[in-house]
Image (cartoon, rainbow, N blue to C red):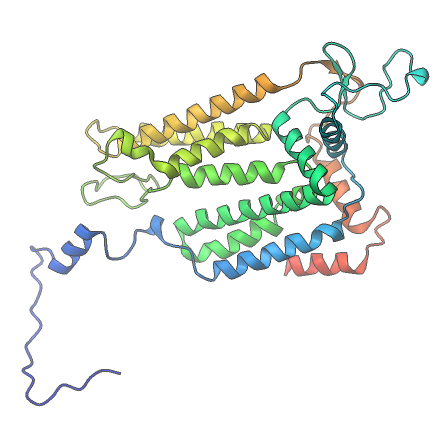
Length: 364
C-alpha cells in the first residue's frame, strides 16, 4: 500500500539524469559493495536446504535396502578384507588361507590380489589412507557404517555441485543437487566401499575453496576481459590472497589425491585450468594476477604433494597373483553396471517392490 500524499505536499519533478555524470546512488553502491551481486556471486536459493535434507533422507534410507551383509564387487571385497585384517591386529601382508591345496602359492583365492614384495600377499596396497579409514569404520559399525559414510560423502559432493552451479545461475542449484545425487554414476558408489564419493566430495570442496572470491563479471576497469574468465578481488597482497577458504581448498585437493587415482587426475586438470586462466591475463599491471597466481600455485602444490604422499605410502608388491586378469577397453564399467543391476534387480531381474519404488521415485 502506498501512502497518499497530503494536499500540502510540494511535488517536485524528478531531475533528468545527465548521461555524462554517474548516478550518485550507483556510485555509492559500487563503492560500498552494496547493490546487485555479480552473476558469479549469487547466493543459492534458500529452498536448497529443504532439497538437501530430502536427498539426505533418500540416500540414507536406502542403505539398508541396498543391503549391508554382502558385496558384489571384487574391489570392494579386497578393500574390506585388507581393512578388517589391519584393524584386527594384522599388517599389510596376508597369508595363504590353505597352502596345502596350493603349494606353489599361485592360486590365492582373493581376486585381484598381488604378491608382496617380501613374500605373502597384499589384497589392496594402494590408497592406504582409505584402507585404514574403512577398517576403523567397519570396526565401529560394521559394513553399514562404511556405507553410511559413503552416503554422507555422496551428499556432500551433491551439495558442492549445487553451490558451484549457484555461482553461475541461482536457479541451477536445485537441479544440480538432484542430478549429481541420484542421476549420476556417483549413486552406484554411494552403496559400495570404493571411496568414489569421498574423492568426489573432496575435489568438489577443493574447487569451491580455491575459487572463493571469483567474480565472473568484468570490472569497469577491464572492458575487454574475455567472457567466462573470472577475476579475484583486487588490491590485495599475495599473502592476503590465500585466505582460509583457499587454503582449505588446497588441503582438500591434496587429500583427494590420497583417496582415488581419478581424483589425482581431476586435481591435475584443475591446476591446468587455473594456469590457463592465469595465462589469459597478459597485462603485467593487472592486480587480479596475484590471485590467480596464488591459487594456481596452491592447486599445483597440493596435487603434487598428495600424489607423492600417496605413492610413498603404497605397499610395495611384486605383481598380480593372476596376471591373466585384464581390464577391458571400457575400464571395467560393464561389470559395474552389471553389479548395479544385480544389486537392485537381483541376478534374475526378479526385483523386490521397494527397489522399483525407489528407482521410480529417483527418476521422478
